[in-house]
Length: 563
Image (cartoon, rainbow, N blue to C red; front, side):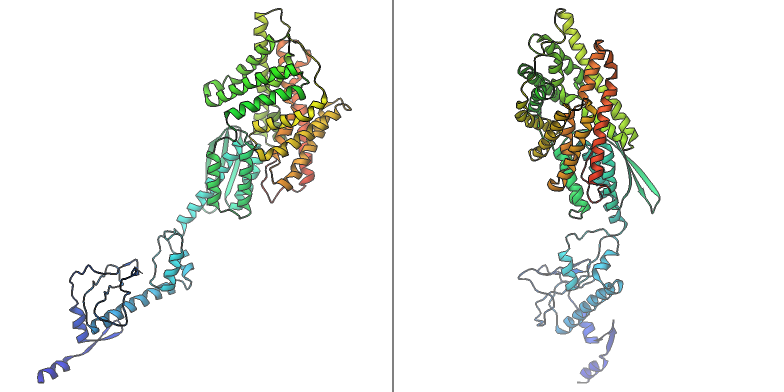
């Protein structure tokens, strides 16, 4: 009896982290068994509770029946499941609640708003054991979000990659150099990226700067000019969706990568077919050929298209493609001098290769103060016209050597009735559109543009003898149409303009002049380059005037590419 009283008298209470724990409770707590129990256990990873699945215990229940499992909330401090007494469970319940309250207080002291608190911390975030916060973490799409400089650099790299990829897509789809730089500048301003862009044929230069660190780096991208109006329209749609905040940067980057790696709009056989139809119809409509001339032009156009596909797959042959193609056309045309007209057939067979469009773009770039790109393109267009003229001269001279009695002019018959132009002109427009990589959806706009250009030139030539004036008025008209059609069809103005400009064909003047200059049968042949420039300049003036009327303050809300 006395022993019992003494034992009870020796019982005292201790203060354990703000909790009054009796010695009995302390002894009971120290006697918690360390027996390994593999049945059910809970653990916290970074202070987050691993809530039990269906059928498991739900932690500290109110009815402590001795069958539950208790695990500490401290990281690395694990108390495994054992049978325990009521006093032991009370102590451990208090420890658990204290640890939970401690972590919640730390999170609250860091920042009252839990979401803002996550944004201000660096690296992988710890999750607190709070039901509301835990629910927020479950709703978060990514638990390994880097906040701070790492995330900022990652986002900046995505923006830089987006600008670099957009520049490649614009160049490969046939955008003029001055429009490339203006479109990229507008996109960079929206993305809040300090960048400067400069394009010369064959190379894109991007200089990225950082106002905070005053550092910069330059990216050089080797990219060759191409023509694919369908891809150009898609790139324009992506850029405009980005600037209107309709598409995030990551989605825009994925779209541009898909465009960049996608194949051309038209395959090899479609390209050959387009060359064939374009040569045949242009011989009838543009050069005043006969039906026999059109038939031979179709065969020669098929040959040129096949050689063009061969050159696109074999880089070695591409170096001599223009000379070999024009020489083959000249030999075959000269050999049929009894049935066809040499000049009409030869020029119509290589009409897709004529540098008229490139010469017009060069003059427009020079007018837009793009001195480097415009000069390079202008010189290339003149030399390219010389190359085609040289190939025609080589082929004609070669056949003349084999058959000295042959006529270099051939049999030139009157052209077909002008009423046939009505069904032939849409076919010509479609074939030109296919050579520029336009989709079927873009054909109607390009057909209308070609019809407008042809009708104006056709009727003005009967009144005005100077072709430059007629070309300028026609270019002004198609420029108005292309910019107005943008407001209805949302198609970039460059898409219909490329077809209409090709129909005005100033390149044919240069090739014809170069051929006569090399054949020494035309004293005025030396002025072929000047004639090309005058016609191209007239077209450029008309296009610039139409854009100025429609957009007197420039297009600040869109990035649709025009001339």
